[in-house]
Image 1 (tube, one colour):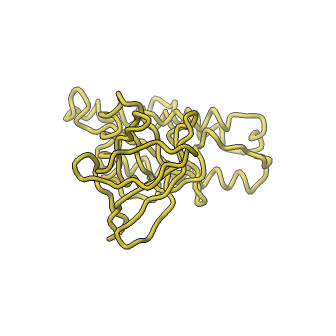
Image 2: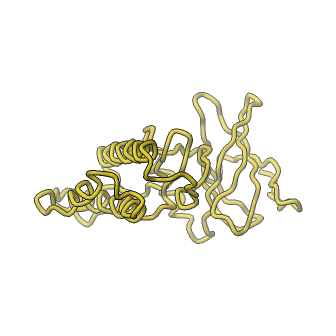
Length: 233
């Protein structure tokens, strides 16, 4: 592969993918052969494009990882690739970006991280509450799908592990699997990890919705209290 070089204007020019040092990604039957993105040192992800053998191109996002996080980025890509679900953002490939000494993980396009979401709309409106209900329902279904495939997230309390897309909210950075448990055949330990995932999701939602603006949402408190009921542990 041609040596990668940093661009003066910050826009990283087209780089070819090489099977020797990156997992080659596909979108449908289209093989990805290259990428480019706008590198901004202060950001945790970058906007860019991926290119296909057919000559087509598509917008994408590139998450940044430290040079020392090689094992982590590979683990996230491997586990995420096992999950074909509408609530999981697709990942296409990972690569080492030499000019900045970072690893990048290429994801499908998203608008922003949930942690960046600026809400200009009054959350007390019926439309916003309905949107939140839909998002919560879809996130619970997505988590059920993750658990069904014997995977765990273990970072769902952090808003940086969710992205905003036009259809709602999707999960990124799935990285743990059943084999990571001390005793992967112990049903109590498996159940304990699943409950930890649910409570982490609850904590993220609670932090963002246990606010005075949402006090008109009947049933909100009961929903969060459900997770603390010992009968379900």
